[in-house]
Length: 298
Length: 298
Image (tube, rainbow over all chains, first blue to last red; front, side, top):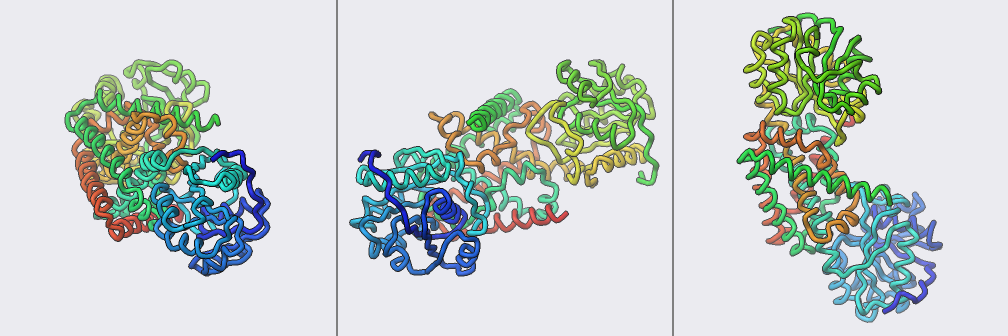
């Protein structure tokens, strides 16, 4: 596998799952990658109608085999646990020259599902994960600039065709994303720590607060910091359920390590160890301020 | 104690600790409450010089007794654990007619310190806590609109003079804050859950990530959600150390209850209980979206 192969020309792209991410890619495909026809696949007619009205897709269907029969590019942008039947349907109907990619937040499970379902099209699949999003869902929340200056992680395998990889690489560069490659295990471990765990903490925190007597009052008295801290708790519950179920091992490792550290902070508070608390808060502040400085400089 | 007494006219206000909060109050006192002279007290000459240059204060000193000798209003805006010597100095020199307030994030400890140090001026003290802030520190970070539409909690006691309460109440209404009153225990319990605990989680999370091998790369790959989630981990470490040491009981109760809930979520992930995870994420999303809707409507 080399990356020197040329990217394919994409005339017809199929977006399966026209939500925040799928809709934003569709917008980029049309205005930045020269794609002339975009078909949406989904379950919610209201959402698909909105996507047509917004010019995000040209038409839609609920039938994957029909949609992909003459597709040049297929983007699977459904929650992770819906991908198996989708890929089985793709395998039954898509042409041999098709390029298939996804946008899932976990990668090992998806690559495994692709291996098990895509058959002869296995080498045409390039797993991808855009590190971008908002807490909003649906085609109406999508926008073209979503991926600009955000990381995009590709996790190709030894069996990935070079031209398929070149095509997916070019499409993502067109969106303005910073494209990097890594193996699936590294992806799942890093994302568990930087994204999946914070989502669990935010969801747990908000649900914890909501269960307390007088919680309405508590939410009213919460400062802006609270609403920033918990923004990600407004994310799509089904997507995050699927992430938990498909990146279980890495998430449990991250969460258990975090609980261990948190218990140590609780212990410092119990012992009134001001020096330990001051040192920890200072290390955290320095690390975050430094990371943010580097991020803004880019 | 009634609140029908008239607020006093404030000619000379003294701000002890001219940081983000102290500086922002000073700006409001001058432009919204008609205060003609503002003296700053602090340790950092660079910060105080900046405050003078920005027109936030007229002059400064490092000597509390000198500053407060003819004060009409004193705002103690230092970290909590620095308040005892400050209040002792106030007691030694301020006039009997003075009104004293603070902006501390904990209230039981501060009311106790005031009781133990202020002597005859005890009834002139009105404890207050503006639920507002940013992750930035220092006079240069202060701004007049900081408190607009934010909650301001007063925790007067039976011994608080009605005219002192009326004065502090009016000053805070002038800033645009929504003034509410409650007892010190309720304040400390609610703030532990809505503010103090999230700060601990954010600090612990960032420090946890910073200790991992390859953490620079991880911070680069983190999405915007991560930076929102951890914004409060850039807050002043000394302030938050003091909060931990002075609101220990309520914070430990909140943190231990949170760890209990988090372990239950970890258990759901271990058991691959998708229904439990989906239900929890949905309850959290609904609670947050609803709270945010009410907040924006106000």
